[in-house]
Image (cartoon, rainbow, N blue to C red; front, side, top):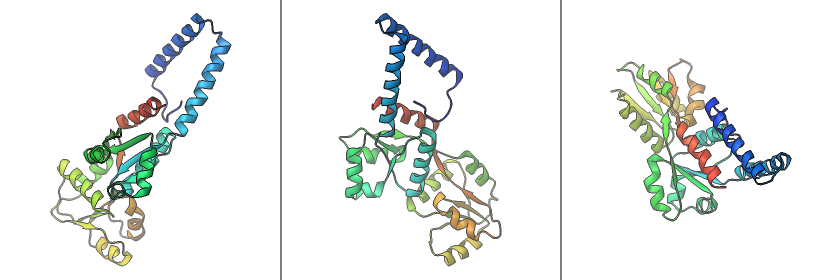
Length: 240
């Protein structure tokens, strides 16, 4: 089974020792090396098929980040997940409930773990950690303190996440505003009044199209932590 990144040397050594042990066990049981190789290939093919068909749902509050998480997991682990909006789950939308009922693994972020666990008391919920991209925070920290800074986003949920992260990072701007409008004219007018902008992934193309003055516009993205990616790998294997 191959999950994205190459193994570190010490992990390769450890896996090599485990393979050696398995071969020793096979020989002790009277299984030839050729027969062992055949069994191993069959087992590996079976595991690969199960991994490809694992049904994994990820519950999150805004679709902008959900698409980022789904794409990251696909690139890193080579598997697809089913994104589910928390609001659809709260409203007991039939399509969301059906997907969750049939899921092998249900994931959510630490921000929503308590609520999701309370709404699905009979299912195991695995919690993953999120981290803002460090480069984004560094660039935002370089905005002049008195600059007119705007947050361009679609959802109240994403707005809340960003505000909490800025507060936790001790970043504040007295002249701060939120731009949520979808109207191109209103967006252009609001954007023209800014000195710098923080942009959610779902609004980046909108902003790039009208940023003729090259106003600093920082895309703010949350990513799954490395530990969370490793957790998902482990869950998939354990679920087989």
